[in-house]
Length: 163
Image (tube, rainbow, N blue to C red; front, side, top):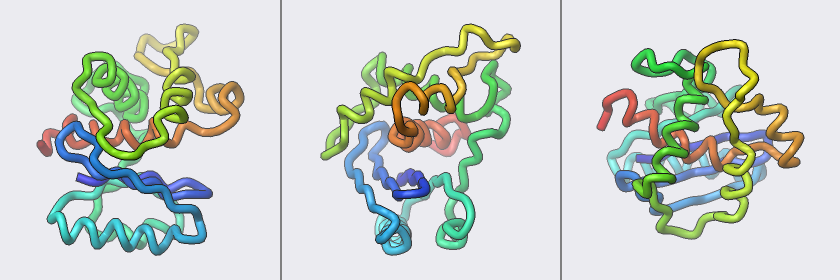
């Protein structure tokens, strides 16, 4: 399985074997379209499914892939604010119980920094599980949490029952 996160500056690609991250690539905007085509070739080579989060012009490169829309309702009617929050909670749970492993070159320090800023929103008006607002995370971290997004997308297939 392959998960992809497209940002304003980069495309992040993760190749998975179960819950083992076995390959990670980061391409800057200059190579964004090329890297997307590489991901599509990987899909054909691996006869695998690609899950992605992208907007705008990049959508056209992902024909046949499954788009993750993080602001949708959670899967299985679980008590999360939305799908994004649900995926974050599943990622953190998997890290804490040791079922997710990273077995390739990966920016672990950046990932750990991002994870440290993903915290439960204790001041939410709803009774749903949610993390603090992304804007607050970006302000405290100084950047977005794209690596957390990329790895959290792995749990989409599991929650949807595709595996």
